[in-house]
Length: 116
Image (cartoon, rainbow, N blue to C red; front, top):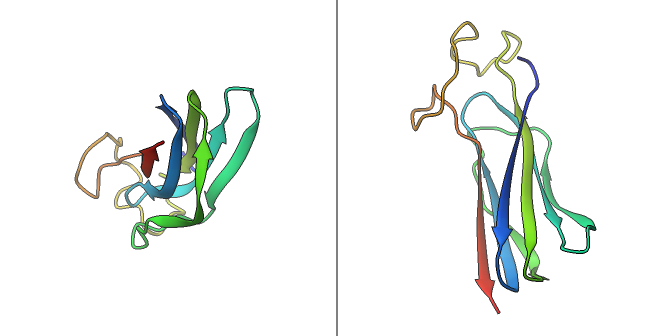
C-alpha cells in the first residue's frame, strides 16, 4: 500500500509537562504527526513530520514544555509506503510484519514528559 495509515494513542494519566516527541518507523515510514487531544475534546498539533526518513531519527525538543491536564491523549498518526515507488522499500512484494529489524516495521511515538 502506498499510504497505509496507522494511529497510536498514549494516555497521560496525570497532569504533566511534555518536553519532546520522536517519531520512529523503519524504511517504509512515510509521515507522522503528533496531536494532543485534551479532555474537553479540543486538539492541538504538536509536531508534524510530513516526509519521514529512517536516517533522520531525532527527538524534537519543544521550545517550552507543554503543560497538559490529566486525561490528555497524545495521538501519533502517520502512514507507511510499501509500494514499489518508495525507493527505500527493501522489498515491495514482501508482507510486512512488526519487528526490530529495519526490513520489518515499527510505528512508535517516543515522548519525554514529567508529571507535575
